[in-house]
Each structure stands twice: as C-alpha cells, then as structure tokens.
Amino acid sequence: MAFLSDWGEFIAAFGVFFLSHTLPVRPPVKQRIVARIGATGFTLAYSALSIAILAWIISAAGRAPYVELWAWQPWQNHVPLTAMLFATLLVTMAIGRPNPLSFGGWGHERFDPENPGLIGWVRHPLLVALLIWSLAHLVPNGDLAHVIVFGLFAAFSLLGMWIINRRARRLLGAEEWHRLANTKRKLTITLNGVIRVALGGLIYLALLFSHVWFIGVSPFPN
Image 1 (tube, helix red, strand yellow):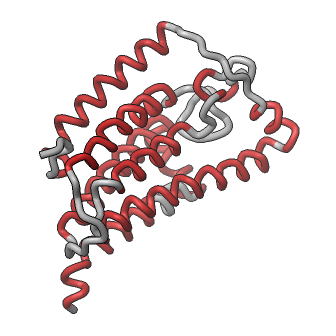
Image 2: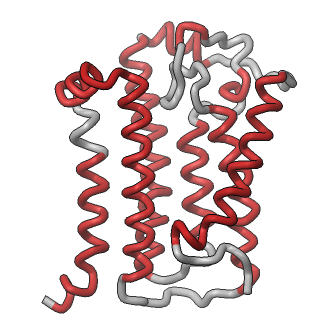
C-alpha cells in the first residue's frame, strides 16, 4: 500500500499515456473520431491531449519519491537550455510539411524527394526532436523517476523511427519507398523557412519563461 501511495500517481500517469497512444489511433476508433471532428480536428485534439498528459507525467515524476542516481550540478541545466532550441526549431520547421516517410505532415502528394527541405537531412524530425528533448533533460534530472520518464521517451522515439520505417515500406511498397527515401540534401533559404525559424525562436522563448508555471521547475541554473 505504501508503494502505491508513493508511486501511484506516477504509474497512473504512464498508464493514461499508453492508453491515449493506443486507443484513439486504432483504425475503427480514429475513423469515428475523424468522421465527427475531421482530420485536422483529430490532429489538434490528439496533440493537445498528448501535451497535457506529458505535462502530467513530468509533474508526477516530481512528486514521486526522490531516489538519487547522480547529483545535480548547475552546469547541467545548460544542456537542455541549448538542446531545446534545436528541438523546437525541428518541430516548427517540420510540422505541417509534406512527409510521407514519417508523421506530423500534410499534403504528402506534394512531397518531392529532389526538393525535400528539412526531410532531406532529418527523415523523422518530430521523433528526433523528442529524442533531443529526452536525452537533454536526462542530464540535470538524475533521480529515478525522471530517469524512467526521459529514458522511456528516448527509447520510444528510437523505436518509433524503426516502426514508422517498416510501416512506410509496407504501405508504399519497396520501390516507391526507396524513391521517396532517396532524398537530396539541399540548403535552400525561403520566406516560409525564415518565418518558421522565427516562430521556432519565439516558441522556444515562450517555453523557457513558462517552464516554471507549466512544469513547476525553473530551467535556469541557480
């Protein structure tokens, strides 16, 4: 009973997370939801739900029993402070762009492997952003609960890349998958890209200064 009272919320948050990433995306369930609120509505609602549950998991980890695995040092905070800028830029540069090789994009029929943009460099930008977020936050959070959280999300992002690659090969067919996956690496500056970078910078600052309110911990070194 003591274990459940101490770790109960932490376990429950993870249980809700896994249920939310299993049930709504099952084809029959997803089809019914999309029929009611549309594909865009589903994406927005699912994203909001995922963010809310993620915030709950991190908050629950902070309330779980503290079991130190390594000691915190002020320099460690600089790791996520720096890494999260790149993670945020990856998200803003990738979200909503055509990307039939991963998820998080729209208009896949417009994808051109000769001019793939960011996808030519990073096939799964959203999962790479999640991996950066996870590994960067591991550094200043050396207690057992947070290591479980960020370690599992890092593993989840790596496993997700492998699963999505296999699924894309199966759905697209080997020939089409190889055609789309054989992307060119080009560095092209466009107005849309500049706007996305600027938006990413603003979102990064917003996340930085709302971190205490949203998560309950300051991201700045003391």
